[in-house]
Image (tube, rainbow, N blue to C red):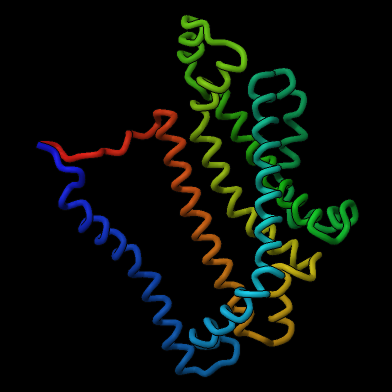
Length: 269
């Protein structure tokens, strides 16, 4: 007879979570002890940072600074992913086009997006369009390369199988080729998510008066170190949350593609 949930599953998960939390908790406690003992204005105590966090990033601060940053991040990331996927599909399925564009793509991939901020400022001006543009650029080429390599590295047997079952055209791309390339694409999307957050912050520090990056830099220049640390705390929380959400979506996609085992619904009798 099977039961819906294994009796040992919950303790194992709690134990794994507790083990993963040991180092972060130790670092937080160590920082608090050191900050309280040193009383250094550059390293405020955790209660002061938390108070600045609530004051700066909730209420009007969320509407004024956090929401625009998240909108720019989402827009630039989606545009970069969509463009990279589309371009990668073209290059992965057209060897002559890939050979012709390979030098340009290789050169563009080596360019640090933050080093191109002056160029984006000249082309797009100061404003959300500049942030969105540089974020999309930072995502585009990584997705382009990984999508291309994922399609090229697909098992040749999949092509034979598609021919046997007469799966061709768009259906072959959607049902066979893209699921096979999913690990490459999702790995690039995860990497680009962290890069997009970094580029968002730097672009706001350079060419914006509002946003998480702009306010964090302003706090540092104004010697408001509690607000500065609150900005870094917000970015850390945002990064962890986005990574956790992406992990859930990634597992669902890989499971749907048959690259991960389905979740067990019961224990063995």
